Image (cartoon, rainbow, N blue to C red; front, top):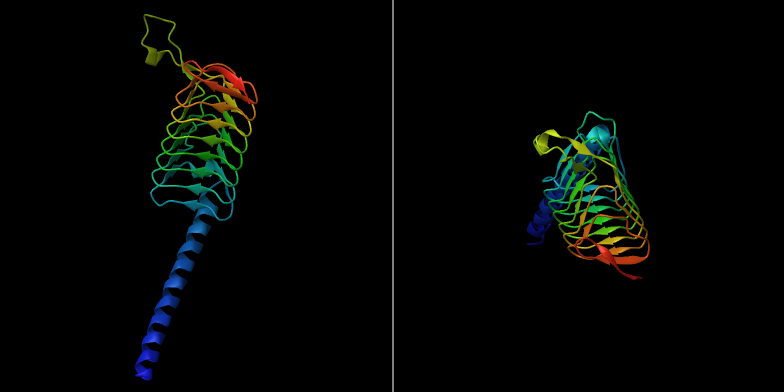
Length: 215
């Protein structure tokens, strides 16, 4: 009986070694491939196989970044601007990040919950330690619609850019419009539409967003 047990154990041992070797080689190939296609990529980066990434040559990813299922990141544009994700960032399921010719720079230790929409048009800067809740929309661009005789789709857009400071919490379904600057350590309540600058260390809420109180 001991002989059969030993043979069985040896069989499982060999199988485990083969599995571990295959996993190691797969991870090594994936890491090598990413090092080639991305502008820069750090260590311990986890990208779901269900994530879609376009224009990887214009994307910089820091260390310990997580990109979950169904995320779409698109840096394809004629401009040389890129998308930067800092260390320890988490991009959760279904979030869309598109540069549209502008630079998107996200600092370290930031998280975007599921189904956020992040555009780059006129430039987007996000500081460190920023939390963005589910369904938030950040668009640094605005359609031109002054000419009543011309379809809005043919009037183009204007851009100013958006800047979000450090240690900011953006609630669920918040919309941040072009030209806005949000100061450090500020909270924006769920469902707010931010059309003007928000000061540091404050709480904003409403449509349009207004100062509720200081922190």
